[in-house]
Image (tube, rainbow, N blue to C red):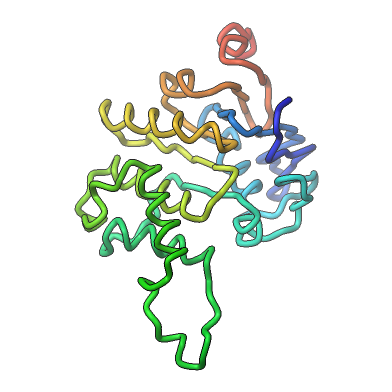
Length: 244
C-alpha cells in the first residue's frame, strides 16, 4: 500500500478572474517522487506555494501526514514535516556549510534555559542540534565541505546545501522547486543521485524543467497547463499521452 503523506483535493487558487490553479487533486507517497511538469505559467509554482502554506487557497483541501492543514500557515506545516527548497537558492552566504545546517537544525530543537542566564549559552553545546546537523550534512554528501564558506561554493553545491538545511528540519515531505536549475552535467548527475538516495524515507514533489532528469527520477508525473492537470500517470503513460 502507498503511504500517502501529502494530498490535495479540488485545490483552487484564483487571482481575481484568473484561476492560477483549478480543481487539482493529487497525492504524494513515501518512497515516491511525483513530478509536476508543464510550460511556464502553467501553475506549478503556485501549486507549490499552496501546498507549502505560502499562499491561501480559494477552495479545496490539503492534508499533511493525515491532518487537514488547509488553513495552516507555512511555519506550522513545516513543523509537521514539510520541507521546501526554492527556485532561488536560499542560504546564508557568509556562513560555513556547518553553520548553515546547524541554524536549520536549531529551528527544531529550541531549548528552554535551565536558569535566567541560559539564553547566553552557546548553541555549540547542544548535542541534539549538532547530531541532527551532522546527519543532514552526511545525507546531503557535504561532510567534506563542512568548513567551507557557502558563498565560495559552486552553484550545484549551494543547491545541495539548501537541501541539507531542509533535511536538518527533519521533514517527511520535500517540495523541490527546480533543484537542477542552472547546473552543469556533472552537478546535475550528483543532484539526481542525491534525490534518489533520499527517496526511500520521503515523499517528494519535484517541479523541474530538465526532462531527462524528470524521466530519470519520477515514479509518477502530472502535467499542468493553464492551472489544470491534463494528465497524470507513470512516465511511460505520460510519454504516450496524446494530449501531453
